[in-house]
Image 1 (cartoon, rainbow, N blue to C red):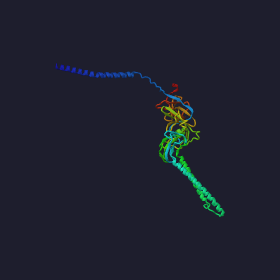
Image 2 (tube, rainbow, N blue to C red; image 1 turned 90 degrees about the vertical axis):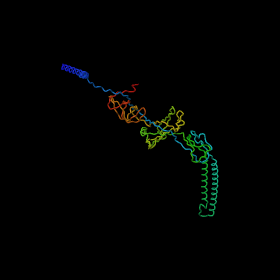
Image 3 (tube, helix red, strand yellow; image 1 turned 180 degrees about the vertical axis):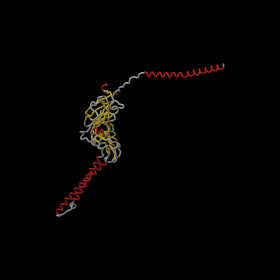
Image 4 (cartoon, helix red, strand yellow; image 1 turned 45 degrees about the vertical axis):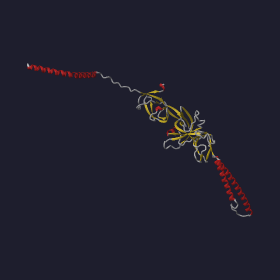
Length: 406
């Protein structure tokens, strides 16, 4: 009986262990069987046929190259300055007794008009004294001439063979003549000093700065103000060496009588309005600026405050203006949009097989909207104006003309 009980318990324990093992291993077996089934299905599925994918052409905007006879224009900037500007300095001393209303900052004056007058009383006295000295010297000369004539007659009557200039009073006559010339020179100087008490200028101009007032005592050589002429103004225009080559002008160029002077169009914005003036290049420096490595051209504008004024606005001294210099001679060049130029001297051209070609061009001139070249392309070539990332020779492209897109 005891043995039977022991056997029963052993069999029961084995069944419990088997149940636990089955409970744990069942999910693992299901997963393994599932994986095997999936692999079998994949292996049994036929592989699709591989097809070569066609390379899609890149669509790019293009424009046609044109050939034109062009005259190069160069853009630069500069400041307007007077051609003639001087400090007003008196040559005599005295107190200012008259001052013209024109002698004020910004005032305009006519040629030979009196701007200032210095007290001339002392200078009038000097003129009177100089006139008296001339009269005395003239009398002394006439006296010595009469004496010389008498001595010559006496010497001839006495029949002497030789006589010195002093004995004949010729030396005294020469001295009297010299004294007369000196007296006349003093008179001229006195009259000149009297005339210099009136401050005049021989040109039509304007006052830039005034530094004295009426009643003030001024010394000869003291600065009283600064004025400038308004008949002509100048603009110094900086140019690079390439711009000078574009204009086809040499270093040291000087216009002869304005016949070959390149035209310059000036412009400036004042407020919301744009004003324009016209002038000419009259000379180009014969040297290169050592600090900036630039070459300076000088342009002139005639009558900037009168006939050359734009809509009543003069081209005033001190104004900063934009300048566009027209070339002297025309030449043939290939014209294309500015967007076609890449890395200063490269363009992308689409050939007849719609393949991209990277070409090197010789640039003649560039502006905001177009570029002129002399080689590297031909008339009718299709140049790319779209951005092209990672461009390589021979890549397939599809050209699109902007004009065709409306």
